[in-house]
Image 1 (cartoon, rainbow, N blue to C red):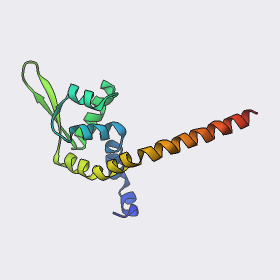
Image 2: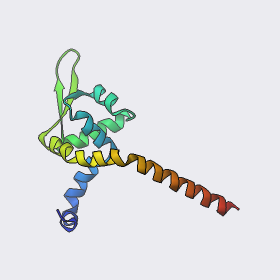
Image 3: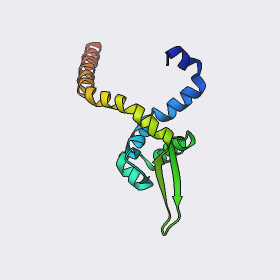
Length: 128
C-alpha cells in the first residue's frame, strides 16, 4: 500500500500501529506464536517486562483483536492468552521484518558504537 494511502487513513492505522509496533507487543506476539500461554508463562517468556506493562499491553492487544484472553475456571483459576487469526496474520507479516532485524543487529551494534564514540569525542572537544 502506498504511503499516501496509509497516511490518509492515519487515525485507525496509527492506533493499530501504536499498539502492535511497540517493543512489548512484538515480544508478546512472538511468545504467543507457538501457542497458548498463561500469564506467568508469558511474563517469563518475554522477560524484563513489569506486571503493569504486561497487563496494559495485553489489554491493548485484546482490544485490537490481536490476542484472545480466556479465563479458565479451575482450582486455582488462571488466565490463558493466545493469538487470534488477526494476531497470527500480524505475526506472519512480522517474520520478515524480525529476520532482517536479527540479521542486521551486528551492523546496528557497530553503528551505535561508532556514533557513541563520535559523540564522546565531540563532548570532549566542547569541554576543552
